[in-house]
Image (cartoon, rainbow, N blue to C red; front, side):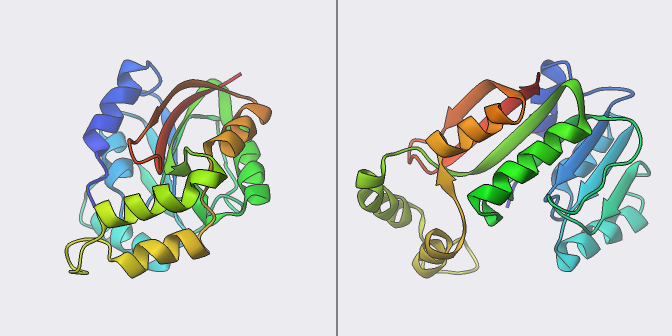
Length: 205
């Protein structure tokens, strides 16, 4: 999946939080699309992922010389221990929904703790922007619009339904107060037309 890494780097550069001398923690880094793009413009990137398979793919890229300022660590939201100076940016894309709401709040609190004052959290996730009474209709519409019959080309109906059933995606009106409660200001929020995805730019107060 294209992580739009170059566009995300430009967004953070335009926000004035990413550049020479900066440090980034990428939680849920996967195969490293964003981490490697950020490494080209900042001093230090810590790429964090709990998946040994994903981490191995990133390490393979690093071993081939993709970047010399990226550190790959096999931990996650609740186990990563940040060392050194506070980070300027924490980035996370489609990973927080793996945690139930209690642990989301704890993870967000830990993220705030590893950022400098004024540091930025850039968060993408599956977040439901509708009321519970409308959930069945909105989720069915999203599945119907998104699904494919070919597993090699995208997500099947059963895979999308499995996400809704087994993952811990929450509502915008639950997640956003969590973000603010742990010490962030939501500077910008954008939502997909489907009401299923959200992107946040948050500044640590």
